[in-house]
Image (tube, rainbow, N blue to C red; front, top):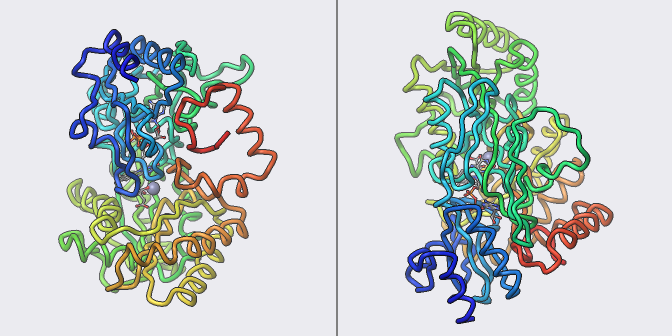
Length: 471
Ligand code: FAD
Ligand code: 2HG
Ligand code: ZN
């Protein structure tokens, strides 16, 4: 392997080839510290040509690569295995904005561009880049596309896939596929772009992308409402969809247990709604007409919701600072969970028509089989996406609890997901976390097709092996 490392130094300056343990360490564990890997080296290329040359060299030497962006993923997709034979290819130095096309309303950026930097660049030009998630200060657009990230604006603008028009990808042979086009229509056979999006680094390395931009709304109004049961939250969503249509840009649900945990670790994030209702919903409307128009619309819908007893309480943010506080409260739930200790995550989607039944039955079974567990259930209700996370009973060591109960808890939740015809991964992906469960979930035919694609595009299995599908 010494020869391989020496060869690398013909592609990258020595300082961008990390081989010392202390230099590699930050790249070898995931955000949750659930996975810890080893690597021959961590490589930091700055151009697509360098990425291509590295992949070619890896292909010649049968060295596997693990692509990495901001390393904020939840499924261990960006963490190498324990062999010490893989290399991590972190794309953070590829962070250039290549072009903004005002008339086409698109931006062409490199994969290592941090999501927030992309949002800010769009704003500078008077546009909205709508992908938004709690990790936006550190996740990167390449990682967002590789996981087909969702977040809080999906119900209006779609997920990362819906926002992408073109890609540049380095293939497993070390060739560069130039799919950098800003076209909204292009029916020229198989959609390669969509194949790479959501493939979690197993089919190719995304080096650049053309993303859609949107006009900035002139006004946004945010409200928190209290609901007494989950059925009411869904009827409320339908009411907002009917009355506000595309002005509805956020609809996030948080259970009382989630907000209690938040308040425990971040007391300044207390729920401003009085009364301790079981469900709190954060709703955002965005308007292109006027502040007056959207405010009136919001008040009218809320009045109707009160009248028919869908909500028991509501508070409208009186200014941007308060609206931001509502959003911070929502986004801090993940951080509160991290403070509390390891929990068992279930990032699932359920058809809205089955959501009530899912929550009622799964909560009841969970509390019956695992007395005292805390169900940290919250998520993007507008998309039917729940983060149905399970924390151990108070006072129980999370490590011991998870070791003993993880398998049964996953089985219980995923059994209910199958009953409701849902998905075991709504937005976080598969990585290594859900590798074993994927075959049964997708079914034999779909799983074989996925394996066939992987074999065709990466016959040597050097791109993020044993993530998503094993061949
Ligand atoms: P990484 O974690 O570095 O990588 C993720 C996967 O993509 C890995 O398999 C990796 O190999 C692959 N990959 C990375 N870059 C490339 C590339 N250039 N080419 C090919 N493959 C690549 N996710 C959501 O969807 N919605 C949320 O609301 C959300 N909220 C979050 C909140 C917090 C606080 C945190 C910590 C995470 C959250 N996430 C959320 C999860 C995570 O942020 C997303 O999955 C994000 O898209 C990952 O981007 P990243 O750059 O960190 O990717
Ligand atoms: C969110 O929506 C993220 O905040 C994180 O997807 C979910 O903590 C989680 O499980
Ligand atoms: Zn989420």
